[in-house]
Length: 298
Length: 298
Image (cartoon, rainbow over the protein chains, first blue to last red):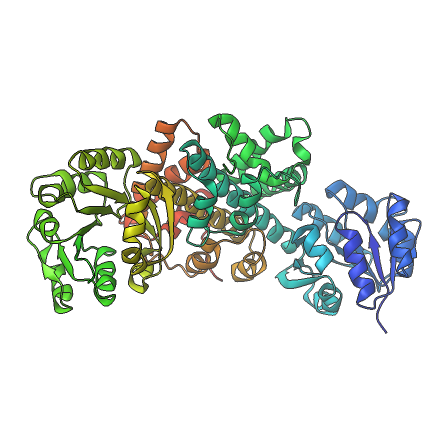
């Protein structure tokens, strides 16, 4: 019989991930700060819990999927948190994107109580969560990872074991650093082309397929020239992740000048009215301000 | 009958491009500063000329493929240059990567003599030149472009008309700006991962397929972690192109902070013994110096 899986945090990512667990035949018990987001899950047969502690008392595997480092500390170690309800058989899987060093700290505290923890942040956004095609980067004890693999497979496609506790979070931060710079690469190409009067659709056609090509160019480039700034991934969340990247860079003693530059340029996007709630392709707006031209389809 | 095509410049790119013209059935007449590079073409039936002027006297379409802006000025407008031999039916196609504003200047001088010119820089490197799969970005009069399309098709696959004279060069500079930043994106992800002790092969596997993915990550990432710095595209040539990008940014009044950063980091690679002759994936060396760690497979 499949183990009961608990899900703490039913946001834009957590809810579709829980749905995919139900579809794969896992009994799910869930809780969320905002109770209204439970309805669509209980309709599918999930059980509602009042607190992370109650989730942990009833589930063998407890997934946390919340916004930031303090939220994870709160739902795991806080009053009525996961740790208050977990036992020695429990596995806690934090799939949020948070600080690798805090991850190790939480993992050590749980280990002292005999509770195993994996960090398994994801990439692929809401679309990947809904379609069950997330990339999952996991850190923690390898045998625990192996045991949880079928659970990951219900939610994702490209599932990679990265090593000891915190390694999944570091891989995710590497991912966020890299995609910041691919967005900047698209933005700089488009702003130069726009200022020089090029047909931007022709430009994307000319350069997307070669050495300058990227996921960002193929997926965000067309949105930029259409003036479509609806969020696939929000600037505010990208900035939260870049703060984690740059904090980790400081802790490890590594210089990431390009990522730091993108972080600064996103500040200029965030200062605009509701700029932080735009998709991260809105990085172009900072370069548009500097160049005095819009990078739009003509 | 197919028109005679002249090729001026038989370097790492020009020679395979001329071979593909011969294979497609075009009569080719060529010249090169270093005469020894003619042999393999004359073996295939090409005619050797003594000067660009002689090439232009005998060919209807004259392709120039040389290193930099002054070289193009020299082979087209210099003594015994293409312009000295061309007539009113001639079409000059410069496929080098040079300054868009100089391109327009040369094009105007040729137009005054009734000679048509296209700028048609390429991307895809030596591999694309050999396989006839270059991306070609063309600027100049559209009807001249249409007439020359079969010639381009003998050398490339993704052939895009970008607009008036100089537009092809601008598109190429946009391409070079974008790929500088995708290389930086790979380098920053790998240096953070390396410093934090990740398995870099697992890291590339985890992040290549998602939103951080790029041609550079898939093609240069594995070379970096293997310590393979053989040039696909040399740092010295990339720096030449970035100088053109930043010069164009100055002329058009557009800020490209990321491209400028990569240009500065490449300076640190060039100062090393023979650093400029490494492949552009050697950008990682600058970040390795800063972090005091090598981003290599363990």
